[in-house]
Image (cartoon, rainbow, N blue to C red):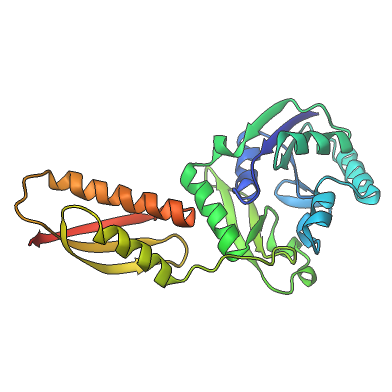
Length: 265
């Protein structure tokens, strides 16, 4: 069996991208958080996201439980897969899983930064930290809802070249109890501070600020006279300043910073 590793820090979107990645490389099976997934559906195992705390979740993900380990090994043997993708937070973790499932050594190592953009990773981490949402790369119908008293919903259908290759389910596990709540007023404070201290702006109005998922905004500004500078450079500089400040304070850049120059003051 040809074995692949896909690793990266928790909450960076590995499970979200797993089905597309596997399909692109012609990989038949996926090991993710204790599950064996084949053709976009759960074949065996129990997800670590069913656990009550992080310690038992990690043990589940690395197949510490012997009954769980043997059940997945048996399913792998019966499926007779030619290739397998193992997902983990590090090379060390994926190697450990490969050893536990008797599919070592790993032939190919890949990383989440190879398959996701910086903005996609930022967004995934932001959603994990502020909403506590985790993605499972299996259909909603295959998730045992009794385990999730707080939250479970359908994710999205995954397509590759117009062909459906699977679905995802979004859950909020019991062990993920701490989330960061950022109110809109905090975003406004940071944005107002940057606008008030940016050279060249005489007056500004925050016409629109949306914070439902990724922050986005429209700002109307008046420039200081006389205009002896390149207006485009001022606007680009302001966009970069706001994006950098949001990344520093909130861990995510805005989806867009739309700036409208109203006139000269």
